Amino acid sequence: MGDLVKIRKYAYNGDTYYQHGIVVADQQECQLQLFPYVMVYIFEMAAASKQYPNALEVISSIKL
Image 1: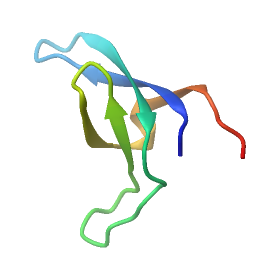
Image 2: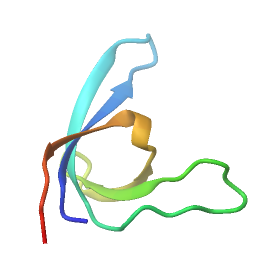
Image 3: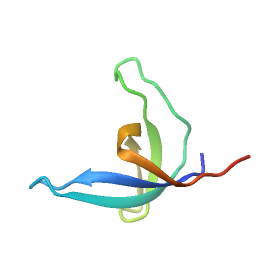
């Protein structure tokens, strides 16, 4: 929680673009969804959303 991350996204035409955000909740697993996810506040969208680990790259990690 609190890590600065880069999020890989894809446009409709298949081009890759990146957004940046901060992890606001620890990894969670939902029985209905097979894959774990974390909640990330995305700066460009000014909103939090579920992000899967394969789309995230840690830029700066907070060590408590």
